[in-house]
Amino acid sequence: MSLLPYRRNVGAVLFNHTGQVLVARRADLPNAEGPAGGWQLPQGGIDADEDPRLAIFRELEEEIGTANAEILAEHPGWLTYDLPPHLVGVALKGKFRGQTQKWFALRFLGAESEIDLGRDRHPEFDAWRWVALAELPALAVDFKRAIYEVLARDFARFTR
Image (cartoon, rainbow, N blue to C red):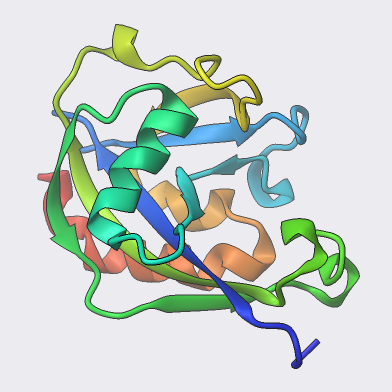
């Protein structure tokens, strides 16, 4: 496992006008709730030589059908997680041991009708909802929970 690299990734904590954040349910885990990890924040890989600030808007467009948002803040560091042993060689196309992620807080500027999970030919998500930022850690899979705790703490100022 330690021989595999980390995949570079961006993630979005997308706030609505009331300070809630968008979470989406993975299409490959339609019956998963809470600790089972079916719900997560939009995130995705960074292309070679791609600026993370551009990648986050590309990922939003691909995953939720709209990039109608503005960046509020960028987490100062990269947050990294390891896949659990049973997913190494399976998840992330078997090429990575986990991900190192650059996270952004963004404000959604559009109407909810702009959110279209089916816009991509291979949708990653099949449902979405707004939740309180403090709920994020409880929704995360175990191996991402520590990152969601950091995000809930460090981006709390945007819930007001």
